[in-house]
Length: 270
Image (cartoon, rainbow, N blue to C red; front, side):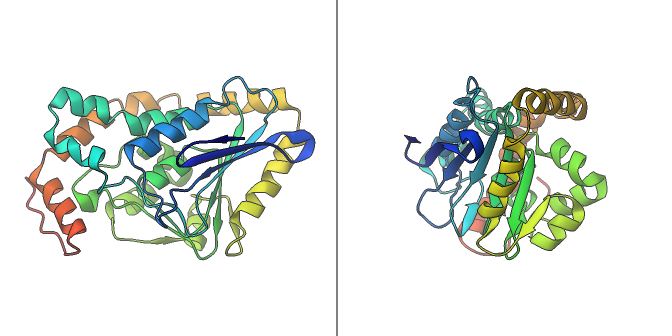
């Protein structure tokens, strides 16, 4: 068992001990993704690189929230507005580094989502192989409503799952909550569970995976991912720079200020 500030990893579960659970819980009820949380979750994914004993990894949040997305109130995160462009570009790589680390894992990865999953939380969830969602949970992608673009290579991943029209609907209509049933209908999640039982359902799926031959599973995942994501880097090579550019706009400043002061933003396209 490994414990850090926000992330706990438990290994040796299920058939032949081939399942691991990664729990991300900041203990604040919202599970926002601060820069430090991004680093810890990235380190958690990378800790499985040489782990031949684990076939499936379940990632879960708290009972009330998978994640509220990037922490706009975190001191390190807010320091971005004082960074020069070079420092900002380097700092903005934390998110893409996180999602890529989880996508690249040889183990089958399953998100167990309860409560709400917002912004960066959705970006993380779609980087995993499967998603199980509590029936009373919801997803939301608010980045455009904050004057930002959806980053972390999330657009191509969502496009693979739900197609162009649904991706535009999910991302551009920033205030829209996507219910568990809608997410299932769209293909954004693979299974809906009774409220409070997303982890149980994810563990059952993990047990099925863990019962399969580990090498065949790992190689099949690699083949599918290479084929499905072959053009993703090409499609999103400007991801970080677009985010950096948007973060310098007046609309972004207005969006964040409106969010923090709980008022409706007024965007001017500049």
